[in-house]
Amino acid sequence: MGPLYPQGLISEPLNLLIALFIGIGFGIGLEAGGFTNTRKLAGVFYGYDFVVLKVFFTAALTGAIGLFLLDNYGLMDIELTFYPKTFWIPTTIAGIIMGLGFIIGGFCPGTSVCAAFTGKIDGIYFVIGAFIGILGYGFTYEPLFEKLRNSGGLGKANIAAELGISDELFIFIVTVFAVVAFIVANKIQQKVNSKNPVENIEELGL
Amino acid sequence: MKEDRSNKYMNPYLAGFLIGLMLIAAYYFSGEGLGGSGALKKVAIAAVNTVAPEYTHEAAYFAPSVENGKSPLNSWLVFEVIGVILGALLSAAYYGRLSMKVGKSPKITNRTRLIAALAGGILWGVGSQLGRGCTSGLIMSGMAVNALSGYIGLAAVFGGGYLFAYFFRKLWI
Amino acid sequence: MRTTDKIVIIGLLLGSVWLFFSGKNTPEKGEIPPGKLHELMLQKHRDISADELTERIINGDPLLQIVDVRDTKEYENYTLSGAINIPLKDILKKDNLAYFDQDVLNTVIFSNGTSDAQIAWNILTRLGYKNLTILKGGLNNWFETIILAKPPTGPYDKEADELYQFRKGARVYFGVGGGIEEESAPKPKVRIPIIKHKKKEVEGGCS
Image (cartoon, rainbow over all chains, first blue to last red; front, side, top):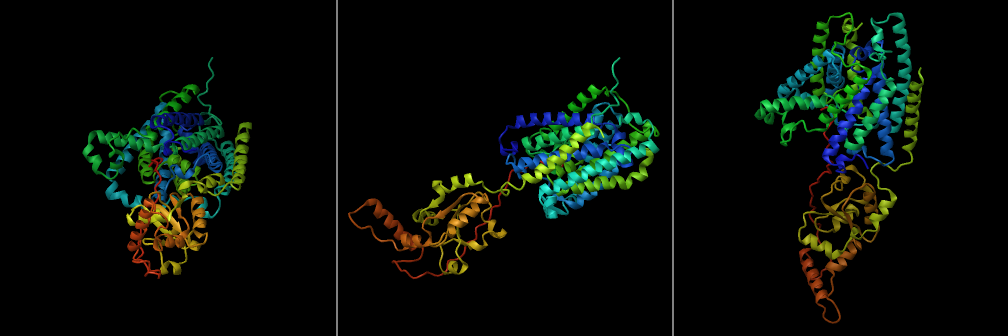
């Protein structure tokens, strides 16, 4: 019964080997999906390419449906996994900072690593920037960020429980919402690209 | 003549499905979510630890990653990101996208694009540490287990993106 | 829309519907399935005898946690030394469950001539708490065995005599000298520090 490693059912070296293979699958998904192309990523904010929305929601929902199915059939216990704690104040502030970083930099950390190692020079600059940001944060952590980072703590909060509905119902609602969003996004994308297409649109491989 | 696939991409839903399967595997085998910035953090800490080990054992941000005597690099997320790099290389080689170039809108110069990328990276570096994760670790992995933090992150990152999109449109369209 | 798009999207929708219905038929999270419960009920270590419990109390076993599930009135009247009172009707209250949410202490549950201890054991076991035992025969039996202990009859038997001497000694320990049957003063309630159940923390995502 999963999760295997936290319960000591597989060894540490095997766990790290599995990490490597999971990473390979993740990397193929990101690169093949077009996430090393910064223009495709930024498209979600301007309506000319919604690949981020499609890949991202499909991945998160596949994960959610699969994990809760495993949990319901007793094949794994979600409570034993890395279940993120919620600190709503720093997450909101940091989220807005990252949103700004997304619009300016055109990547997020995972996609920038893929881009940098497949020869995108802008990806390399982004990764360097991320290191500068992390070190800057690290060196100023105690005076500047420590208090903020630990404010607004809500523990291991589950959104379905907060809304007073079951995990299953919540995932179903998000799935329906996502499917509607996919259809609307396709309409917007067609409209934007037929009326006022971005230059060199063939690079996006739509 | 060899077919040019460099502008071809996998069906986005299929790519999402593949990433979703990896997410399930990560939770099932290792009890972990997928991450990106966590590995960058470990590399940064390892670098500082090599230069100034006394400092890293004292400072509140660095100490938790170095105190058990093991290298900060010996972590699940670092191995996962090494895998990500290998996967991206495999895929880019298959599609014929392995070449040095700057990805940008044709309307801006390389210099503008690189400065913007650097600045965006810095913002993500700070944001991912303050917010306990990036798009993959905070939002996607959080959403997969119905964590409230994942949805707050989703609203804040994409809300923030749409909020600022108008002001930076010259970079992209 | 392309065919692949449709297949994945319909797959997601069907998956979420499947998930929705799979949630209804499974036991609540953390509950023990019937087969496992049956196995736990039949295991030998479920009960503890009056003598064994007495010995552990006298030895001051630091891992022993005694829970009296009778009413507060009965508890205040008389109870085992060191016992805490959690009336059966309040057992599912959060503060009370905290006493069982640990895997260090050995908990002995008792009541008096009713099946209350048994009911408490069943509820707590189904909730997944461990190291639970029931005092065999309840408080009445304990009182009869230890406090009202009678010298062994019949031919001399070393073992029986030792047991009797032990019980007589225990009687003194519990503050009743020569077989007095009246109820003693309420015992001071000892609060045992709660050790919260800690799960192995997994190193988290990007943080």
